[in-house]
Every structure is written in C-alpha cells, then in structure tokens.
Length: 362
Image (cartoon, rainbow, N blue to C red; front, side):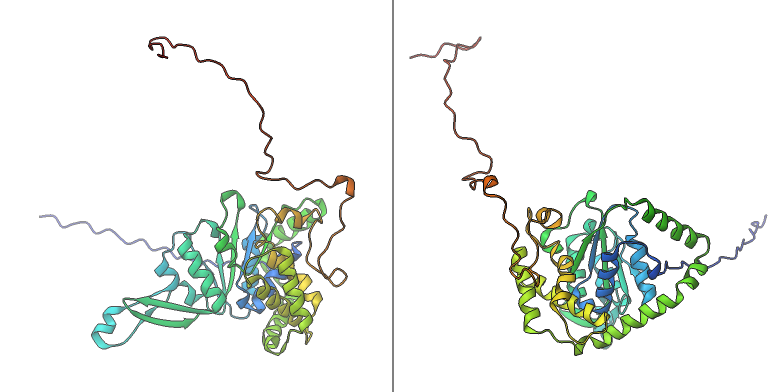
C-alpha cells in the first residue's frame, strides 16, 4: 500500500501595501473644491460635500488628501455592493438572550468616526443606504436597531460623495441632504494642465519628495483646521448675517430651511478658518453657491451659473435684483402650455369604403 505523496508548502513573503496620500496643499486649481472640503472638515455637521464631475478630475485624490491632513483621521470607502448592516452595523441578539449583554457589531459608520468617509458613485447606491448615510452625517449619531433593541454610538465624520452625471442623477430628496455641492469641469488652460501633470508625475515617481516639499504648508493647514474646529462654538451670527442668509435662500427659490442652515454653518467655518471672531455677510456670500447650487428648482440653475440673470443678494445689491432687459426685448408671458400654438381649422374628408368591408349603411 503506497503512502500519499506529501506536497511541500510554498511560502512567499508578502510585502504589505502602503498607499501614500497626495498632499492637500499640492492640489492644483479647483479652489472651490478645496474650500468646500476644508469647511466640511471644520464642521462635519454641515452634512458632507457632493462632488460632481467627469472622470479624472481629482475627486478621490482630494478626498484622500483631506484625510491625510487631519491628525489621526481614518479614511474609509463605502463599496457599491455594501449592505445596510455593513454600513450601520448590527446587534447580536443571541448575546442578549444568553447573558443580557447587548453587543454591537460596528459597521462602516463606526469605523469612520473622526475621519473621512468616501463614497464614490454615490448616485448608484440604493436610496436606503444613501438616506441612512446622510442622516448620520448630519446628526453625528448612528442608531442600530434589531428586533426591538436599539443602541446608539457617535459617528462624526466628513462625508465626501462623488458622482459622474453621465451615470445618472440623485433624487432631489437625497440631493438636498448633502450640505455642500460643486460641479467640476475639465481644465482647459494649458498652463494649468501642465502644472497638474508635473505634480502628479512627480508624486508617482517619488511621493516622499513631494510630501517633504509641502510638509510646512501641510502642517500649517492642519493646525489651522484643528484651531478652527475648536473656535466654532465661540463664533456668533449677527442679525445681519441671519437676514442675509435668509434673503439668499429666498432669492434662490429653495425649499425648506436646510439651505439657510448650511450657509450659516459654512460661513461660520470660513470665519473660523480665517481666524476671525465673528461671521460676516461676506462669509455668507463666499459659501452661498456651494449651499444653493444643488437646491435651486430645476430650470433656474442654468440662469444662476453663467448668464448673470439671478444671483444671491450682496451688500451692494441686498435684494438680489439684476439689471432689467430693454423694453424692446420684453415678451408677454405665455398662457397655457408653454410653446402651444393656436388651433388651426382643418378640412374633413369622407372615408371611402375599404376593401373587404361592407359599405356603411345610412
């Protein structure tokens, strides 16, 4: 009887993979993106940042760079195939029945606490996941429920969601839950594209060298973010700032009060970042578009962006009014269906007998 041949085990040393983050201060261009991320990092209660744009516009690079900027902040990514339990966690009911102890199996929200939670292609996630995610991002508290038992834990993180509009849009109800939003475009300036290429190629070749080059700027910005977080409770909103935020929201025609609140929190974060002790009207103007762009009713967004036909109120234009077009170009408002033409008289033709059908009797 032959004995089975033993197969020697093959062992291969596995080197752990490490992925360096691109320095935040080395990002080229996209000033609104950098501003929105910093404001959300100072006050996660803003509700996160939604970044919309084509592929290759540094959306994920900027999110990772932000996490590396915050001291000890974890960077978590939500997979598209994640379940609701994987996101919010679950409770072990068997332990409750056995020894009366509630044991929480933490989900991704718990692991993202005090860090950055990155959601790529958020528009492709199930609505239930997006709704739960945005609710926790705004409140900072996650509630796990199962079989009549519930437990809460802190989940305060910076939510960064990205999407490509070519792959579908978010429902307006979910879109409104994001605090800030912006739309990125492909850089069309040759000098700027060259600077981006130089920075990216230099990072790919030697990440440590680029990190050392920006070490002082990174340390200064990191300290500024930490100081701004600590200063938030001490900043107040004067009545003029409250009135101005309300006027901006009314001029934009947004629903509800979420836009007003986000504008005020973002304006306060900006004032704290700049080391000031009071929020001003100019702070509201600086962040208004980030809070209003995705909340304007459909059809008014195009007017607000490039044609200068509507804008938030400002110090020199408190009501947000624009120059009126010349009287000669004024047209009466359409009545009824837009673009409908008046009814036109048409003649009638007697229907002839069709082959195979008996003639119609009188």
